[in-house]
Amino acid sequence: MGDAANIWDAVPDWGGAGARRLIRGGRGLGASIWEFQPGQPEYVYHFHHGSDELLVVLRGEPTLRLGDGERMLREGDVVPLPRGPEGGRAISNPGDTVARVLMVSSNADPDVAEYPETGKVGNSTRGSTSRETSPSPAYLPD
Image (cartoon, rainbow, N blue to C red; front, side, top):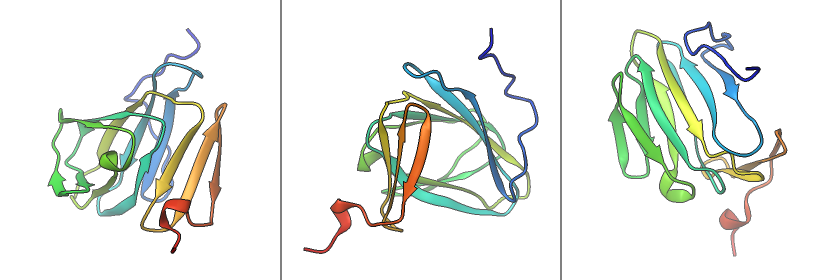
C-alpha cells in the first residue's frame, strides 16, 4: 500500500505553516495535513475552480476566514469548502498551541486556485503546480 501515510507523523516546519501531502493519485480523493504554528498569521485567502475540499480540525483551534466572516474552529470541526468563490477561505492560528488540519480534496485535474486579494492564480495539472503572478481575468479592470 504505497499511498498509506500516518496523519500523526511529524510535519516539516517551514517557518510557520507546513504541509505534507498524504495522497495524490490523479483521480479521486486526495488529502494533505497542514500544520500551523502558534501565532501563525493567515494563510492567503483563496479558492479552487475545480476541486471541492473538506477541512477537518485534528488539533488546536485555528481561525477560518470565509467570505461571510471569521470563526474559531475546534478539534473535530468539519467544514465543507465547495469549489468557486463561495468556498473562498484563509486559515490562521492566533492561539498558543499548534493547530493541525486535514484537507481532503476531490483532486480535479486540471485545477486552478485563485487568490483574489493578491491577484495571483495557480494551476495544477497531472500533479504539477505552477503559480502565475499576473492578475486573474476576473479581477482585471475593464
